Image (cartoon, rainbow, N blue to C red; front, side, top):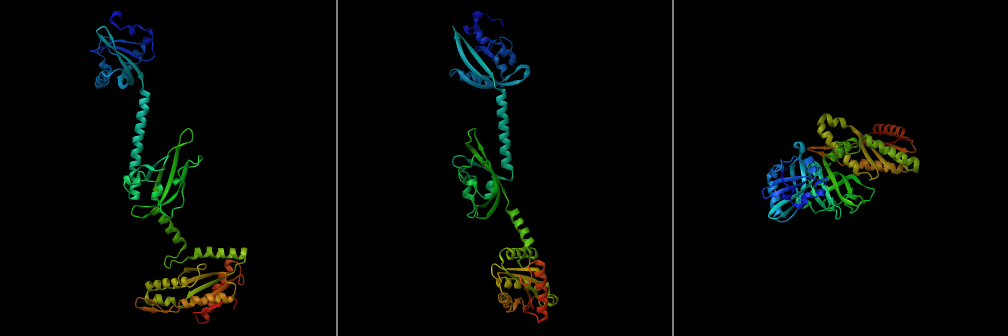
Length: 418
C-alpha cells in the first residue's frame, strides 16, 4: 500500500493489531477505501487492492450501507454479513466496527471473526426444524408437545386436531386429561412428573372427540431432560386405532361366537368345558353337560325355507340363554345342535330342574312372520364326575343320552346313567 505512516492513525502502527489472529481492516471514510489489512485478513478474505472501495468485499452491498448507518449511532459491536472469502469462497463474518478521527480525517477500524461454521449449523438446524414441522403438519399421526412445568399442550399438529374434531385454539393450553374418556384407565401421561428412569410411555388411551364419539388411540410419549435430569419437555405421537380395534374385536368375536345366534361357538364351548373340568379336578366342583338337538328342524327348512329356519334358531338361542344362570353357558355347536353347561350341579334333581327350565322356555309357540312354530328339543344329560371326568367321555355320554330322549318321544330329557 502506498500510504505513508504519517497518513495513518496511530493505532495502525501497533504491532498487536497487525498480528492479531483475526482479520483487522483499516478503512478511510467517507470514501470507504481500504488502507490496511493485517495478514489474517489477507489469508481469510478476498480483499480489493489497496486504495480501492471496500464495498466490493461485501456479497450484498446493502450490508455495507447498513453498517455505515449503524455507525452513526456509535460503535458497532456485532454485525453479521457475508463477505468474499479467500479463493472466492463466501464466508460469514461477525464484524465489530469503530470510527477514529485523526485531525480532520475519519477512519474506520473493522475487526472480523469467521462464524461460517456456526451459521452453517444454524442453517442446518433451521432446515431440520422446517422439515420436522413439514412432517408433523403432513403426517397422518397426531403430535402433541407438553410444557414441562404444567403438562399443558403447547403444540399440536393438524392431524391431532382432526382426530379429536377440535380447533388448534381448543387444544393449545388444554391437558391430555381433557380429552380422555371417563372410563380410560390411569396413565402416566397425565402425571405432572415422570420417574427419572422412565423416558418412554407406550399404551392405549380411550379418548372422546368433540362430538363425543369414542376413540381408541395408541400413544408413544417421550420425555427430554437436561444434563441435571430435569424435564425440558415431553411429546407424544398418537395413532387412531379405533377401526383396527373394532376389526380385532370383530375377528375375536367371530372366532368364539356363532354369528347367527350370538351364542358361544364350538371353540369357546370347548374352553368353557376345560375350565369346568379344571374346577372339578382342583376344587371338586361338579357340573352337568346337556346336549340339545331340535326335533323336526329339517322339516322347517325344507317347507318354509332357510330364512325362517335361521329366525327360528335365533329365537331358540335367545330363549335358552334366558333360561340359565349367568354362570352357565349356552352354546351352538352348529346346525340344530346346542349344548348347555350347568356349573355347580351336585344332584340329578338339580340337573333335571335345569333341563325342565329349558323345555319350558320353548313351550310357547314362536311367531315368525305369518308362521306360528312350536319348537321341540331332545336333551341328553351327563354329570361330572358321576358319568366321567374328561371332556371326551362326558360329551359322548351326553350325546348318547340325547338320542335316548329322541327315542323316548322327543321334547324330553334323559340321563346318561339311565
